[in-house]
Length: 500
Image (cartoon, rainbow, N blue to C red):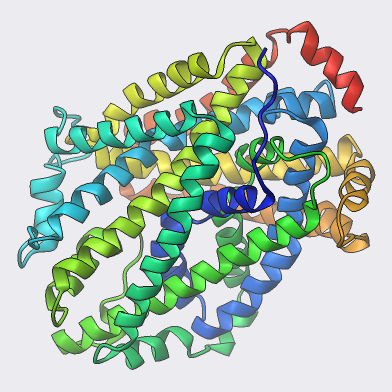
């Protein structure tokens, strides 16, 4: 097996970790979640969630990867002989996410070109669903491949696999050193332009005005923890894998704080930019800001094209810049997601990086074609919902419960991180991961199950929900158990003794 690669610098690792955390959800999910959960008041539970769940979980996963020097399955195997399946479960969650995430990045890539001449015209929604996606009339109708999406998807996969083929320091690190600063600079310019638009003040007022009555609402706190959890790339093998490439003397705890606060800083910047733009749009259309607020795919591909249409001067330029920020954010995250199963294949089967990239990336890129069909959006929506709510959330819950309660590994992991870090964690870290995080994640799981027993997600047909939702969420667990039955190479077992 090849010698384990390393990051060229601490700066390179932090940029890669931040690049993984900063994804599409930072731009189109956070602003809407904050607005719907108390506006300015939401920042209190959000900050508490960052300090009691987000950063503690980052420290845990950074330490796991750094101490046990392996991909998620190998690190969990070295942690405890009965924990390998958890690593594979998280890897398969990442695999599923990569298959549809690449398609969304492909849409953003197409829109960065459409922006040059505002190809979407006066009806962005009709253009997106009709001309771009050629969406089937009803869920369940797969239809044929959409050629335009297919070409963009091919470009996304080729770039992703080329970066991964080049390796950790020469591929992933170099890519993030270019594209993360570019992303931040471009988005900063977009925000500056947005806040100078007429009506921007009203949008920002809507975003920041606190509704203190919401603080007592348990749903707001669950939303805050959910946002932190989903936005930091934790519990699906990424941070364990990335930290396994760190040199032996690395400041684990400080790296976690820097990554966590950098991610949250970008989310705040995104909120300012989005709501300033929404305020401008509301004024142009004679509506209140409340009436134009939207999150998710609708915000990016329906609302923002409408906003760009109204931009005074250079609207094509700013449109292209906005969609390129989505491409950059998406690509840095996609690369980190695919790296989880490239590293896992290398470790488990002792194959070269080239073979792992071709095998893992090849299979994922073929499966992603399913989401580039005329019915792809429906399948993407269902898969995304279930793999997040019953994949990442449940895997995170199982992770902290096993490590803290059953394997009782908290003290050893904490000692490992504290010895090599300037900032030492104490009782706070153990209480957060042993009590607060499991309770919150447990409640989130309970709430998700209750909602889905009451009615099908978004009213989709039961057959579709079972096929692309429940079957996928259960399938990744089953596959995780099955792969954990395959024996490791002798050198992996030997290394287990060395790192223990």
